[in-house]
Length: 80
Image: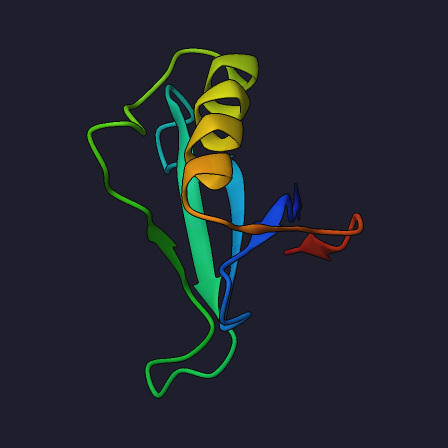
């Protein structure tokens, strides 16, 4: 379970930090609110959001990225 940290300005995507299948790296993920392919998680790819070895590093990257892209701060919702 992951904590939603932000929403995109259009509120169509929730954005959070999580791990992949290997549990080795942390990175930024998003989940679309309404999607034909289902409610899967997708990696938010950007040179400013690299793979990180710790959750703390990934959260710091996301906080900077969110500030520069006018993301909306979430109120503590979670995703499964």
